[in-house]
Length: 347
Image (cartoon, rainbow, N blue to C red):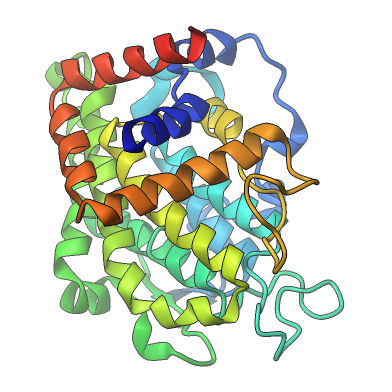
C-alpha cells in the first residue's frame, strides 16, 4: 500500500517532460501567480529603511511575498537556460505555495481570537497562531537570510532586520547574525544552495556545466531540513486547527520528504500544475476523505494518498521513507523513479 501511495502522490506531480514542453506554449493566466505578486516589493530598497537597516515585516503577506520576489529576481541569472521570463527558476515553488496558503485562508488566525488574516480585519496580516504561517517562515525568511549571507544580493549598504510577531517571538530568528547563532546547520544548507549556484553563474567554465539536478538537490535538502526543524517546534499550533486540517498538515509535511527525494522540479508551471490538486479551502470538522463533495476526485485522491503515505511510513517506523530515499539516491534512480511513475499512471 505504501508504494501505491507514493505512486498516487507522485503521479499528480511528476510529469516534468510534459510541463517542460508546455512551458513555452501556454499563455500564463494571471491567477497562476501568487495573489498580489505585482504589488509585492521587488527590490530590497522597496522595503522601509530605518537608520542603517532594511526592515521587513514577515507577518504581512505582501512583505513576506516580497522577500520571495527578491529571491526570484536575484536568482534569475541561474536559470536563463530553463525557460523565458524566469519561469524555469526552481524557487517558484516557495512563493506559489505561500500564495496557495493565503488564497485558501491558511495564514489567518485559526483560533478566531483576532481578525488577523480576515477580510473583516487585516486581510494581509499573517497570524503567528497559524501552523502553516509558522512553518512557512522557515521556508521564506530562512532561505532569504541564507541568500543574504551567501551574497546573492551583492554587497548591501544596509543590514536586514525582520520584525518579530506579537507573540511567540522566541520561536523565530530575525537577522543573518541571529539566525546564524541559533540555527547554524539550517542556515548552512540554504547558504550552500545559493553559494553553489552563485559560483557556477560567476564562473565561465562552470556556467556551461550547470546541472538542474544539482541545484534541485541542494534546494530540496534545505527545504526538507527547514520542515524537519520547524515541525516539532510548532506541533502545539496544530491544536488551533480542525482535526482533518491538522492531519492534512502533518500528512503534507511527511509527503514533502518523499517528493523531495525525487528532486521534483518546482518551476513555475510544474508547481502550478501540482497545486491544482491541493485543497482549495481549509478542511473542517465533518470533512471525510476521500468523500469531500466540493473537492474534485483528484483532490480527494491526493489527500487520501498523502494520508496513506504518512500512516504507512509511521507503521514502518520510517523504513518506507528510507527505502524510497535509497532508491532515489542517484540521478539514474530518480529518473527511473519518475519514469516508473509516469508509466504506471498511463497504464
